[in-house]
Image 1 (cartoon, helix red, strand yellow):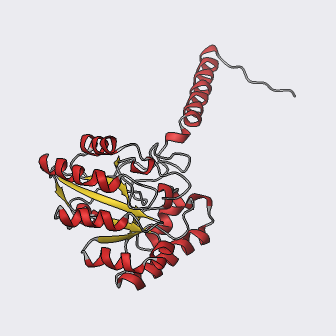
Image 2 (tube, helix red, strand yellow):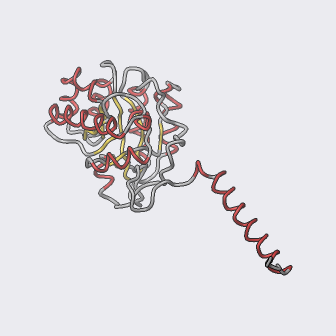
Image 3 (cartoon, helix red, strand yellow):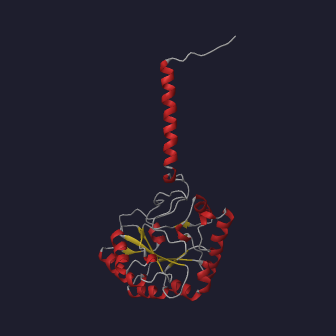
Length: 267
């Protein structure tokens, strides 16, 4: 015996509505996939700034090559009596410039890792990511006598795997809210303006002490003077983090990179 179902108009209309809603939801997810946070609240995330009402700001300096720029920058910090800042050092550079590493350490500045090879870690396998981080860890620990626990990935590049592996190895991944764009050599006045107008309480500022950044040491005194005039106190990243247990800003997937990331050539 043949059998068949009879659908009422209401049932057909309901089915069409449900099907259309499912298609719409799928479309939204597809279109917005590049903007979806890929981590749950409990998952590791990168830190861009720390919510605080206090006028605290962390100046950070990345170094991965060259020997002409670090000393002038250290001299400016000394002359301006800024004794709290954070330097993120790549391990190959540190191995070939141990005396500069020692000067940074003796000045009392915080030292974080800038990884080993200056490549995008999101392109590496899990094992390669782990090797890059642990290699840099060993080198910096031997040179400074203290194991670093902060890391800024080369080019600021990461994905959820990089964050998870870094977290498993005891690291916090540090990004920035204010990019000085000193790595583009946009001019002293422009560097100063970018930092002093974008600065805010709990801010992490990206600067460089690599040789390709030719104007940082000239802009730095003006930045320090203006930020002090605005009432800011300079602290290390670790001191800034101690102000809050917040996870920082939303972390997006590996297809997204901040517009102001360092160029792939390595700085």
